[in-house]
Length: 187
Ligand code: MN
Image (cartoon, rainbow, N blue to C red; front, side, top):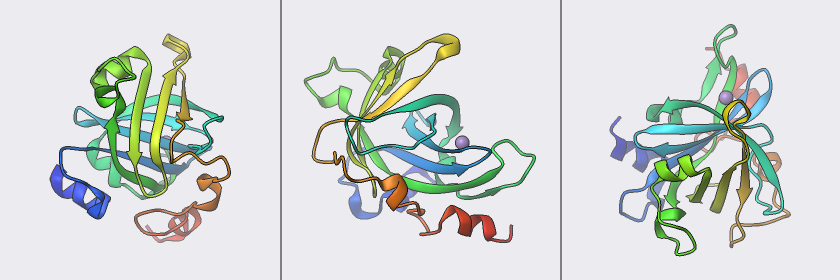
């Protein structure tokens, strides 16, 4: 599928013209449950594993451990990964949509491309998803062997300390299925 069709598919009518990049958060029930937070940057999906998933409460900092880049097409993947294979378990598309790089447009920041923002250890993006909206910051707290980041909701209209979408909206935004329903499907 071409990038343009793909964007139209996942973002529906919510795109407002212009070139937007995609984000996806895949709930991955592997050996340990985690949420793979992925941002399209220069044609690949930059990825972090977030054990507790994203929060909508700006006071909450969620550990985000960088993982390997994935191809853009992987953003649509949902299904079971057979036992014995890397990542064995089930994957569902917990949220997806488009994002903007706040460091390119917000006067509070030194203007930076996403690649430069990643290298700087401070990424600030505005998500337009189905479950998540608004600004999120990814902040690097360690280097080398201790390459850890924190995922933090920024204070804006998308912030809500009482919402807990990881718990209250566990289903796929593509199919409405839960992890259990995907796992029960014949493969
Ligand atoms: Mn994973």
